[in-house]
Length: 209
Image 1 (cartoon, helix red, strand yellow):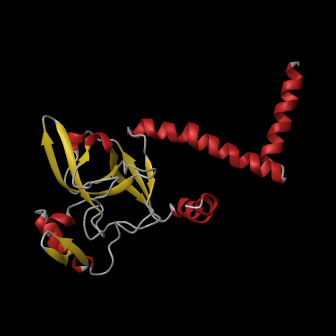
Image 2 (cartoon, one colour; image 1 turned 90 degrees about the horizontal axis):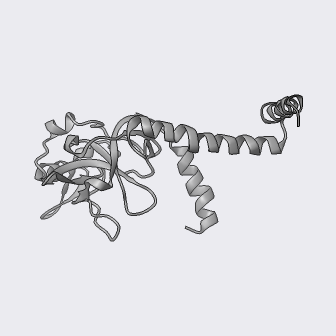
Image 3 (cartoon, one colour; image 1 turned 180 degrees about the vertical axis):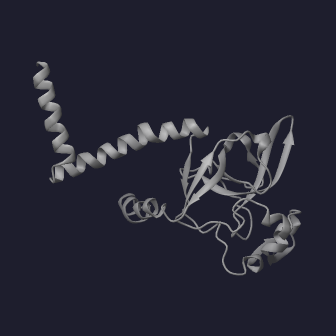
């Protein structure tokens, strides 16, 4: 195959991808977009921000702040209480909370931008992304930090959750620094609904999950 043949093939391929209205062309465009995002864009962004999870789609209501959020139900050490009392038990006052990043929470369907940060630089109030022990990471707020011999453990909680998650997969009272992917630094409202709709209405019915 000569150079002219190669040029002709490339021109035909270009026209097929960008100018054809056929179903085959549409499928190829979807596949190309997936390959570019997954194997070019995503790794490049990951390298730039220092984490393997540079963006997270929020798929639950755990960080939302409904009206009168501070008086919504929670579970304190001695029983039922409200969110403000729960945080006071963690030595976090309402004034402290107002100084935190994302102090008004964020919503299901938001996209959160994440960057890596050394464990020693993570602070109470930061919103971190960490391994949930399952396929989808968790994004919650740090409410306490423990350190021993330069090994850090973080206690976290979803702002809108009544308490911390403790099950066979995760214990939010002791998140290891090795399980932390990074710290949230930006928010794109509602763009994550693309992923949520795909997961809820396409993947779940097909897998029976």
